[in-house]
Length: 124
Image 1 (spheres, rainbow, N blue to C red):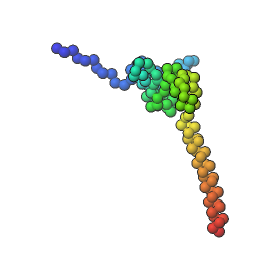
Image 2 (tube, helix red, strand yellow):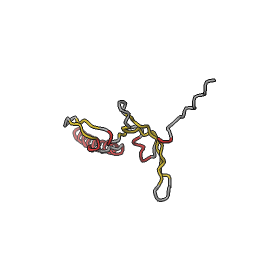
Image 3 (tube, helix red, strand yellow):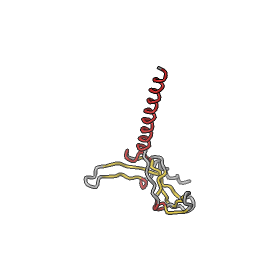
Image 4 (cartoon, rainbow, N blue to C red):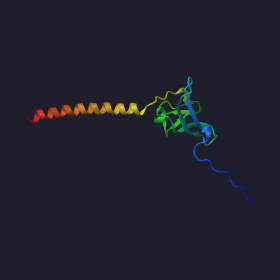
């Protein structure tokens, strides 16, 4: 008789999950699951893709998040290779992008209003 294969586990493994608690009162603050990213050549874990998280990390879901101390960067402008941990990667949030677009729309609306007023004066 052929032994049955073990049941396949669905979803993330327990070692890939975390629950975050307050250090003072142990209130659950949030949890997350993620997939580790590995280098295909050597197998080094170089980052993760956040699968689920609390609302404070929602903007990182489904994005590649690299461990800066485990990757190198080739800077095109300087044509040099440098450790990623020595490079400043400014975080651009969706809120910052939306705020920038809002400002552009307000500026455009003001200019459009000015042009409309000038056209009305010319046609009167």
